Image (cartoon, rainbow, N blue to C red; front, side, top):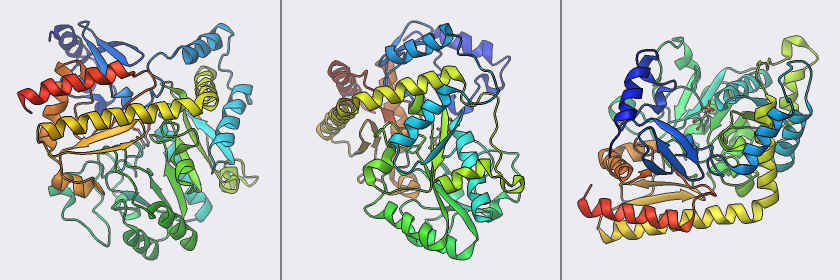
Length: 440
Ligand SMILES: Cc1ncc(COP(=O)(O)O)c(C=O)c1O
């Protein structure tokens, strides 16, 4: 595969951009430079074509350049939907209405540009609501790049230490430059571990527990039966705000988020990614009692929400078009995603069985992950102890050589979109067979 143009562009950009790329989470080997995406496909600077399962870390539920969304964006520009920065707009009202109408726990909603801003504001709301400083996060969860949540994602075993059964892990920052006292108020525990959660609530004055309902930044780690109900119950008993981070699960698994599938409702929830099919929109919503802190009559109790680009009309056009399409077509789109996801999972499982490579494939609808271990993971520690990370990377890189793009880092989620068709899945399975025949 010729990737010389990619290499040249990367080298050129590295002269001006530290690390050569604007989000260092995107820096991987092979160092491809993509120049175009359409439907389920991506093209790099050398003209190589790839079937895309990365979906830019998740937003492209409807595929790249989906016509209805693109037309809504073009119409917004043509109709001079410009940013005025004064007062409200009819577009942010309509987008908020769609979130409130479709997400069961959301009585009021606000918009940001990214998921990280939404999680940041959720922490502020929770602290203002409870008067408490401490927060609880999950080892293996990702909630954005800002101080306090930028910690403990894919922490190596030698750093995170032995499994903690009833207690917390050390705070392991994934960034330098954070205030040193953060570790005192951020408590990291295992996912699927209610005992440790209760212990945190007993030991500290906790404002909120913030967690993805499925850990989708280390593949697809699902909640055990009764776990989410247990979190709800503990938060109610201890007066802690439950922030469900649906930035990855929201709109991908159901229009109403994963919460609508489980029927367990958080106090606050945050969205991003699939809400606008690739355009920069974040959202925060939840109980009116907490959300109204953004507009409290007493300035000393008011939580600041601001941002020049919040609810930019062009991105609102994308969010409205995406949500309206999902609303109109949910009865066909989500079953289609489920069926395509199942085809990928079943086809891959059959191939790995045939080649006698032990894997466990975890999947929720259109999101999947192949774990090179003999059981489905319950949390990050389980993955760190049992998953063959090196084999995972070799597998991903070998598939890229065959034109199938899974993000080449271990445990990164694969995402099917409504643009993936049966022939695409067949092509994926054939490429996988070719890779397994040679060996990984
Ligand atoms: C679950 C989750 N929360 C929050 C974020 C942060 O969103 P953004 O990258 O838009 O700031 C991400 C991003 O990957 C995420 O996966």
